[in-house]
Image 1: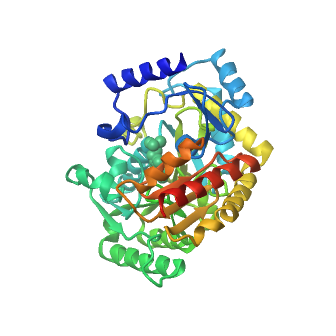
Image 2 (image 1 turned 120 degrees about the horizontal axis):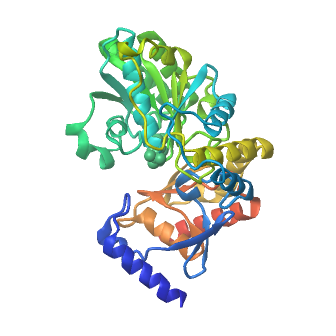
Length: 439
Ligand code: PMP
């Protein structure tokens, strides 16, 4: 019976759907999994088979799936207020979430602007930065970003992206930008500190030449996630802060992937001890339940938008579903649980444990490098065919573990709250799968 249902759903999917980041010429042959339900750390397909969610459903899940406290918060919110626009109205879930979020935020960040997905938060941050500069009398049309960076798929976010495979197609229709090299891609013999210093020197040269035209420098702090979990030294983040202060550019840190505890700190910039002018977050904000993102801003950036209505200094930006109360309710419940259960400290321990459990693979011939910070792990394997990373993930899937690669980097990013047993299973299955595929 369930086999029939699965086949029927797959056929209907193939007839009408277009999936994100999916090559449909091979999608059917890859035997799509149809997910039916979820519980804790596991997804269940329509045939009843369980899969450990090894990538937190694309890096979003915090406490697991169908967490009673978050379920209850969303249900209670449903009984009170489904939605009301945030354009000219306000509501308690939106207010309370802002307070909770700012209580955790890096020093100086004092304003919350809500958006939908990570990309839309980045989009808002770029426009905010440009408009704030303009309203301070500065003409700064240029954005500086980092090679191998990724900030989402809308055009502003793509403009500051640096992954050729994803972004080069669109160059003719993008914003004016300059890129510095990736601080996470080391040259032979280079240490991470050397590399950070070399890229900072590039940034300084760029700002010397064009600094008065630079609106903002946009970075992913500590790890370029979609670029392949490329980690860099915290001194890079500190250097970017100093360079921005010198040149008058705003520092925008995109914590959509790294924020909400992923790196073993609430925010990745905490590892560097600096505060940005604008910070974007999303993904884990609602615990992995609903789309909600935010830009956290310094008060002086916000103040650049204050004037009489006729002065047209308003931030003319927002969405139909900005600050949707159901999303806010999920996020409030998530952040409260994180505080109660000390989830960030747990995530730091999970990270250490992943490091230990992956030790055996580190010396393995087919593994080029294992990069890791907190619960974010990338295992770069030698290519032995066209889709080696994918083949490793398919092997893991056969053993009930769901992971998704970035090219030939196998990504492990379990829910922050994962327990010892599930973590051991995740690591041992991935270890075996790498050895089975990359001999
Ligand atoms: N910024 C970063 C650093 C990301 O990793 C991502 C998504 N992987 C985004 C932005 C875009 O977020 P979303 O997919 O929610 O639009």
